[in-house]
Length: 447
Image 1 (cartoon, helix red, strand yellow):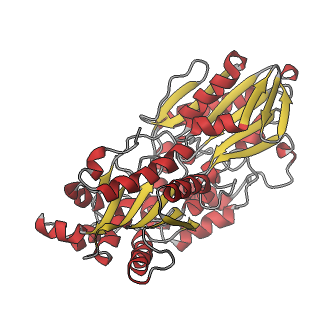
Image 2: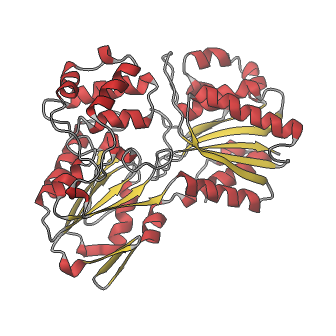
Image 3: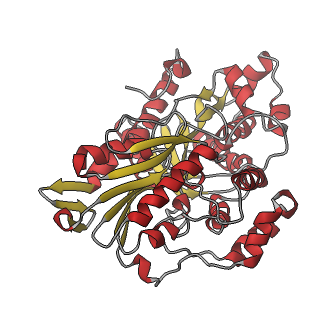
């Protein structure tokens, strides 16, 4: 069954072929399958990755965590461990739910944190504090976890964190930079969760949504030694010139720098296992295999794509032209795949997201190349920016169709209003919650 509305490719065989490749990528990122690939339970023995734990030697098993894939991961863990679970709390984005029996699924705000998220995070902290040396804490971490697991440091309020998050999202800062700041304003991020759970055994199953999968950045690394410092956090704020846009309480907290996040070598990490169970590269590889099966000449260009969405769009549109005109780096029919996460520096008041903006910015550079030349940008979690869309499509007919509909592409781009432009043309990708999150995928198809 496709993740995509058939209306996207009605009467367009090229699009239908292309979206079967995208379907394969999302299937590979399925969190239930990922958990079950990496976790086995037989008798009393729990195996995660290359480690084995005898649960007969553990009194309690607590499950905590957060992220857009959290509910699906929790369902998979319950299928494996059943009533061996003592208690659990997982924070997920509103609508990203799954039925569970032993683990509480707590819906909360993302990307702007809310009170529901703070309440859930506090319950996680209570479970971590309750864990003793003979207990095991299983952490389920996925993309979005940083916003969803908000437990502000002393002296910082939820309203402060909301204001900071809005300023950071508008600044164009990367997720690595945003999370470096978040870790230094939290009781749970930047290794603090592992510190609170010590001396319990901690196992984190991690679905990566960050370029390169650095463990200390994914969901702000609640069970990982932190590589960033208070000085780094202050420098990022200065770099983007947002000091005047953030609350005085946050500025004061970062200036005091009283208690640094736990670093590598800290004994609290001696009983911690961090296991990545799925990521952008796995989804890209599955897309590659499906494209080859369908007869495309295919390659993965990179899974480390970053930068301003509209600038990255120029590169992929140029690659599409190169394939069409020069038959390189691939011969037609071609499918080029990339992954990563771009950013958008907001200048307008429109609606959209980084993938929608990439599609919009690619469109003028594909003009006149026909419907068989496409650039497709997709957020694997089904949520691109603060919208209900997952991304967008641009092809060689986009600009022609826009003119016929009376749409001014450049005005929409200047206003960061990619959503309404693509929606009018039927080029908006809407999947609903996919219950996974392994970052973004970019596709160039030339048939």
